[in-house]
Amino acid sequence: MRKDYQKILVVDDDNYNYILIKEILNKYKIEFSYASCGSEAIEFCIKDKQIDLILMDIKMKGMNGFETALHIKGFRKDIPILFQTAFAKEFNKDELMKSIGNGYIEKPIKRDVLINEISKHIVLVITNNTETNQDANQKGKSFFSLVIANLF
Image 1 (tube, rainbow, N blue to C red):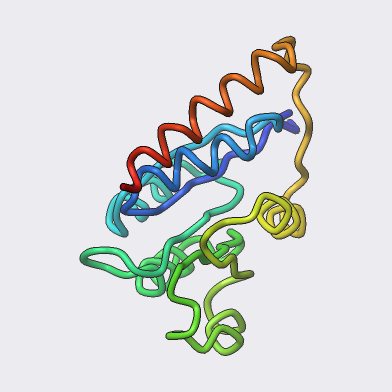
Image 2 (image 1 turned 90 degrees about the vertical axis):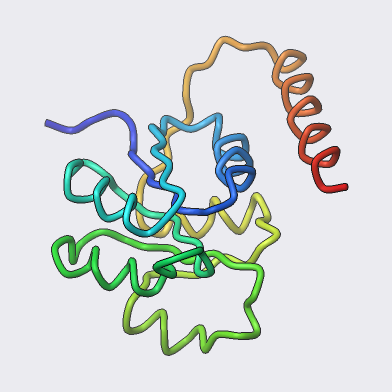
């Protein structure tokens, strides 16, 4: 049976990145799960076989994103993992992507890059959301005001 939505697991020790990703992708039929560390991500993937894609931060406390991805790929070889980090220059992206992941997104996350990279691995379906553009714009302004306020 084909489901009409996709499941994305966001793994990041910064909750604001999870909120930002959800906001960027809010017009698509996506069910999100959130793990704040590698061990939580592994548990999610063991318990939920319906996860279609993982957005994995590289630098996290405890187990980093690469170690977490290796564990997950040990029992879920088919699941696409897109790495994300603000520390792009510290990693040999090409080698790591060939051996562990399926793609790479630099932080700060850009909307078009995120959607493009995800679309390479799963089908994104736009929702039939009845929310008006004005409501959506106000919600977006509120969210980004919150993010900016918490940066300083």
